Length: 426
Image (cartoon, rainbow, N blue to C red; front, side, top):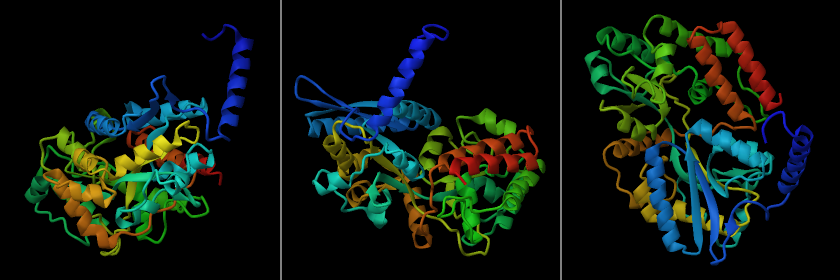
């Protein structure tokens, strides 16, 4: 119905829809997928990611449908930001997908809104196995005793770098190097290779700042749902990166934006970048430049403060088919053939069955070796309260405005704290 027509009726429809949606969240047996006249059940499965992930997932869906001929799976995928925009619209209308890709950062947010299916009941009923997970990952989706997600892959943060550029600059990447060492290396690489910046400007990456804070005895979020750092802390972090950016050692904000959807390193703008280790799969498809994984810089020469995070599958609290959703999640997390198909696209497989079934080669072998090298250093994950996703988005957006010269540091820090504290309710 177009704007300006049937206004009163439209307002009434919206109110009614909102009431229905709100009531629907209280029930787990309505909405979601559908049945058909031939006895088949249809469930909807959505995820975010690039085209290569979509092609792999479609293959796994066909395997599942072959093993479960009574279940049909309708699929849909989008880029990260588009996925969550669409999901929020669907959830508000009581029409969220039956099963969807999720991450730890969103579990409490959507769990508090009663949008996520508690999978404990399906595990108790034998439709979902919680055995055979690596490194205790079967508990990764547990929020206050509710199982709101099951991991399909695990990853950790890493330092990506161009080994040829670093070798040319005479810089060695080694365990125990410090942030001073990192910035000095970026300067040397820039001076030795006029075509590459020493590093991407990753000051806007919440997860990287979280590691830095953890190294200094703090964290991005606290257990009582607040920011775990001060305005002075953030000014120091953002200011340090800005000083090196202004010295022409880091990728400028405008070039960073122009490179999208590629990252600065896969667009061959920079010689180093920080992100999740499984992104090596994506970068390898975007550039012919050889990239290696190295250790996270430290404050004290010892502690990287890293932890495992994971991509998960969650079910909708409103699905009409919780049993079939659980069977689907079980298949996608345990079936060896699924592990062989997906490889490390979503991180290293979370279950032993899939981990053992896939023999990593090429970039996947690099990821496996990297995670093995840091396994003894891993610590518990930082709490992610409801509103963490809003804080992350604000952190990225507001620093990017600083990098583009659109706002001052002081205003940016104040704006971030205002938006983040509002989102966290603190």
